[in-house]
Length: 384
Ligand SMILES: Nc1ncnc2c1ncn2[C@@H]1O[C@H](COP(=O)(O)OP(=O)(O)OP(=O)(O)O)[C@@H](O)[C@H]1O
Ligand SMILES: [Mg+2]
Image (cartoon, rainbow, N blue to C red; front, side, top):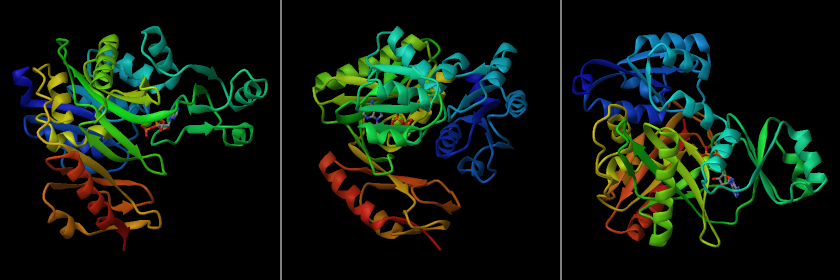
């Protein structure tokens, strides 16, 4: 392994959004060459990777060509052509996390079946082929209101999820193969990112609490969480059980609900760096990006001890602005102690587009929250 990171070793990363960019930056601390595949040649990672291939990660031939250029493949999104990865794997290409795991996680229906088969607590569910089947089941009382519909494939940032509280909401159903899930009475949404290397060494990052905005995107991420020790322990145990059940090498982000009775349920998982781990760059001894590299190169995992409490806020495009990006309030925010601003380098802003994030470090969560609220008021993503 040591040679791998001090030579011409080429790590291929499928997609070059902000997660890809931060992964590239972590790899640049070692002597690893990073190659990105993305449809957009101005994607965030394009400015700092060693090599770039323009192409669609859902296209079979494109993924095969990209795979043949690199020594190892990882990904920063789930939506990748699985058949191409399977072919590359059969030819001996190293792919982490494994293609079979990605195939399960890509499909929320298979994800839920995996939880059921492995005794992972997750809300009760039913699978349906299309909207018409769901309407029939709801009208005959086979699925009781309220419930949540999730498209099996392709959803992100809350797109692909519909909350159906009553008969009248049935018009909001999405069409396509879906799962229907019990609506949980959520007390807190949390996330645990867990890493596992090829030797099976496993480590969790501290539990983070997630607060969402009206567009269903993470608005604030609070770490460490103030939930009871017992709940935090249980969340860690679930994350460790999950990553071991998949025999996964890499990172697994586990989104969970803590319900009103303080029970912990798995919502969904992602086998890659995750928005809920951005803060680890500054607030934890090892960032999620470095941890992923350690895991896939089979180095010992790094310490996940927190350096300081942190609150992370996403910098989203303001609702009424679309066009070339202009940031307001940077100077004011940089003058606040502990404020670390990340701009992803996207040229065009759109309503709610993730343009950057800010991690606020402070000696207490209360202090970090106060500063984060000031940053939220002052720092705005608009257009010219
Ligand atoms: N069973 C449920 N009960 C109550 N609320 C739910 C349930 N499932 C999902 N939600 C709400 O909808 C949000 C989005 O759901 P989910 O995380 O499955 O979708 P997503 O689009 O893949 O999310 P993202 O890409 O933002 O992580 C959750 O964070 C939660 O607030
Ligand atoms: Mg989610």
